[in-house]
Length: 255
Image 1 (cartoon, rainbow, N blue to C red):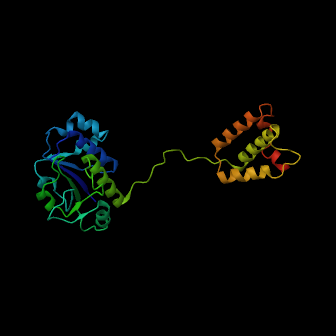
Image 2: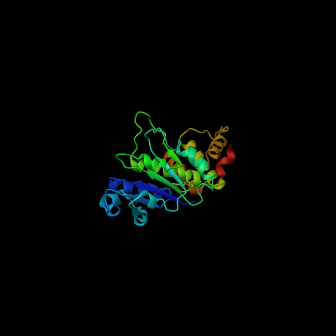
Image 3: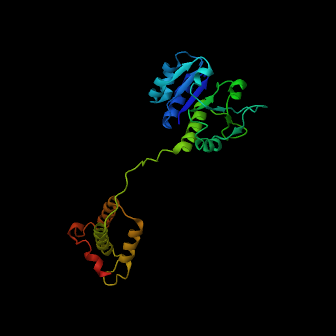
């Protein structure tokens, strides 16, 4: 499903860069500017800085003189406007409209476009009237003003969710769980150290070690955590026999 973002009469170069960045993070790349304030806006330093690496979106962007030119190949138009109007398309939230739109292939068989007006004046009535719907981002009724780049980011995010969100990427490596032998060896090391500091009576161990075994089983201890726990045991009993000399489960047989 082709998606286009159209900025009308943009007055701040930085917002064009911010728009490109917002689009790229959501996987969109078709940006059209209608009569922007700066003819060279796509190459201005502020634009490039605010794009923060989305230079391919800027490179592929087009500048046109009229909205008609920007709508080539588009069959469904969504205005973004906060100002109430006596007449015009129905006003809905992006999420509500996008859920319906994504399921209606006929309505958007060629493409959908999201129109954003000037930072100073918003969208003109004439441009809004051409649209099928008017999107309104739910916001504080006492302060609903959104920066152009921020508004576009919200719309792009909601549209991406409707089309199918990207999977969450793991920020950390998948932990490697300790196996039974490693856990048994660590518990033997701990038993030795607990005896050394007088916490465990080897003549009457009761169920301390089996309970610790169950505790660590529930915790799902990783290999790195095993090394940490062995380090703690070593510091508790510096004079103890090196843990490497213990059979993996030797000391566990006492309990």
